[in-house]
Each structure stands twice: as C-alpha cells, then as structure tokens.
Length: 333
Image (cartoon, rainbow, N blue to C red; front, side):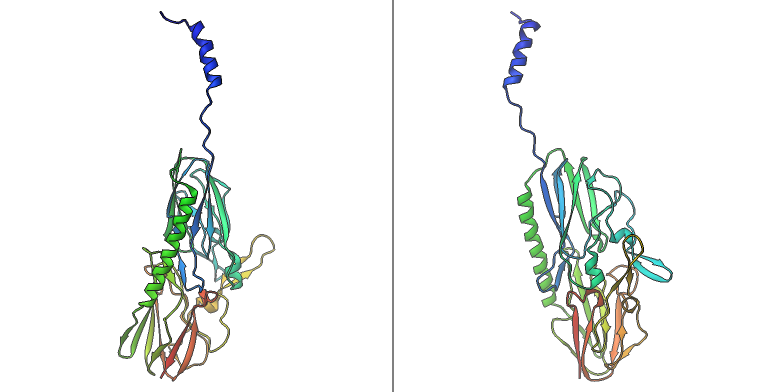
C-alpha cells in the first residue's frame, strides 16, 4: 500500500522540525609569522611560517610581522619596484611602504600591509605589528614580502572547509622559526673566510632554503697584514648591505623621512649610505663607503674591495642594519 502525498507531507514537516540541523562551522582565525629575529638581532628569518596555509572561506589570517617585512598580494599583477627616482633622488616606493587594499580578499586587486616605517625612519628597532585579511572566495593565493623579494613568499589556500587547527599551525610555525634561527647561527659559526696572499674575501651570508640572513660580518675581529685587500661579497639572496667606515663618527641613518604637506612622508634613501665613495684605500681617516650592495643574483654591485694601508684597529658598519648592531672590526698589523 502506498501512502499518499497528503499523508507523507505532514510527517516530513514534523520530522524536519524535530530533528536538529548540523551546527554551522564556526569561522576561524589563523596566524602566520612573518620573519622573526633572534634576541641579539644577529639572525633574521626572511620567511613566512607556515609558508603554505589551508583555511576555509570566511576565515581570517593575521600576519604577525616581526621585522622589516610586509605582506603583499599582487593578484597576478607585476611586483612594484622597491625604489623610485624623483628629482635625482631615490625614495622607497610608496606602493611598497604604505598599506593598500581593504580587509577582505577575494583574489583580485593589490593588497599590502605596508612596512613598519618607524624602524626605517628613526633607525630604531620597531615593535612587531600585525596585518589581517578575511578570505571570502575559494582559491589558491600567492603573496610575498616586497622588501625581500619573491624568495620570501607564501600561499593561502582557501577551501569550503579547512583541515587542521589554528593552534596546531601556530605551534608548528614557532618551531620552524626557531629552526631557521638555529640554521643561521650554525652557518655563521662555520663561516669560511678565504685568504689568498694579500687578498681576503668575507662572504655576507643568507640562504633561501632555510630562510635566514645573518646580520654580522665576521665571528671575531678580522686580522690582516698591512697592504691586504679585503673584499666583502654578497652571498645573501634577501638583504642589502653597506660596508661603511666612519672613522669613529656616528653612522648616518639609512632612510630620511621627508614630511609632506598632505599624506605620508617621502622616504629618502640617504645618499651618504646609498652612494659609494671613490676611495679604494683606507688608513683610518675619513668616510669610506661601499654604497648599497644588492642581494645575490640581483642586478647591481654585489661586492666591495678596500685595501688597508696603515696598522690599526678599525670599526665599520652596515648602515642598513645599524639598529641590529651589524658592526665589524678589522685589525691591521
């Protein structure tokens, strides 16, 4: 015997009203670590932890930006240059330096966290800051740090439902960050300085695989003979550096903010830091500077050589990383 529609209908309605629906999946908040620096500021992590994160539609991601980094979604567009020229002066590109986009990302447009300007402008370590986006559309979205280039990138994978938990991801991220710091410390401890007669080569190190840069020159004072030529060679895919002898004077700031009548300041690269001096020898007096040495593989100067003509103990700086204490010592005998 078949039940009629008239009989089934009220039964179905009653069942629908009495059987509870499955609870809606709560939207989750995830955390990504952007960079990170050791307590002595010697090792910096130029990586995102985790580098790939799977979340659900409607979830939020907060990047804890722990050093001079930013978070930028290009959405298939071109990467903006780090610098722009105006009136013969070189400035940090506002597209890189300042925030752009909204708080919800659906795979289109240019979104940028901006960088911690106080750090660059004042020459002082800045406090960590955060950047949060809510992802509203499924997809796989790549992002990067514009300061350190494509080698420092990450991916957000947005699905209808995420696997894993924010707590587990955060725990794993902190372990990966610590692993990066240890790798940097080991590499510096085992740093090889090449000596070939009156020529010495000091590598400035960093590695993509482990995601670190080391912000020191040599593990101990470099001892050389008078007449030796020292060459500093970039072996770092992330950072820029200078080799700057100030003869005991305070090193100049790397970036000079230029206030504007309206809007944010222009961020001028200090010519004293950016431009090389013509001097090829050093006897302990005057201002001698390499200019900006660019990351390994990038177009531009990747090494700097200087010949030491007088015995003495000489301190020098990387002007870019004065706040991190990147200072070296050469002892000439």
